[in-house]
Length: 354
Image (cartoon, rainbow, N blue to C red; front, side, top):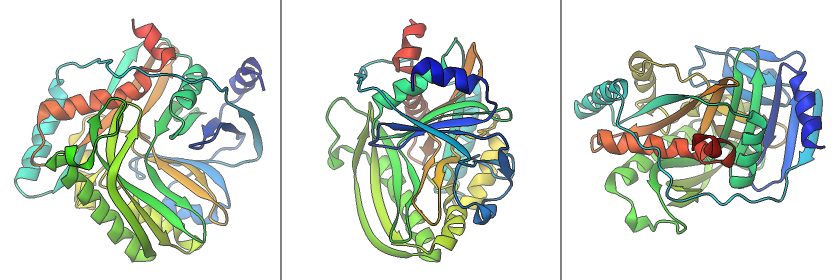
């Protein structure tokens, strides 16, 4: 399908999603004329297969369920995008971020939490072509899950996430613990190059996910931690493989989400602290999205490295970082700036920032 044909088709629809799995060049499209919205993860028990788009706080916003009633596919181009390693849009921490960081850091220092994740957003007044940005992300990030989605309620969202929430089938399920962030050039950092703060953060996430698996599944194997590079960022990653009955998938998602990688420890109290402290809603940022099919292959990702298009002339970027007792305001702010570069450095946006 040609670009103009796809765009003309999507412009006529109110609910659609385009997505491309990692290490694939096939772009899948779903147009849903009767989008279903559910209020709990457990309601997924009644869904045989769908693309789902879930918020950070399930009690705040619904889970959008795109049923595959009208689907299409096309192949992305063979174009490659070489991204710069030195771009920077760093700024000074905002007053609101500084206040929220100090609140989180004090609670951790007082022993109430071992980790809290602080998110922020940044709105830019700049025209953006969502389809071009989606295609840029597909070419630039072949190892990530990339999507473009629109509904009247959510608006338009675009993301390129490296973080698996849950994937696999009845034979074997797989999830990852992804935490710690470091900017890097062409080479992947050695394990010895990571700071104690990053290693501690990754261990917290891994321990939590391992415990979650043992509640409803059977842990089979674990690899890591190791350095995992995606574009200009590197993370610490561990892979966990386990056995899980297909009817237990909604329960597994409920236990996992939100993981300490985007929330904190202890989970319930950390979630409440975030909701009480962060002045702006995360909306669907740090929720999860992807293909859900209990009797087949499920591939769900945490909604990171994403933006929400508010209208044709402005959009909001989201990013967050894990706060520990050893965290500093400046380093955490810088980390969120670098994460926002994932989309900002793509040609369809970068050329307009000049």
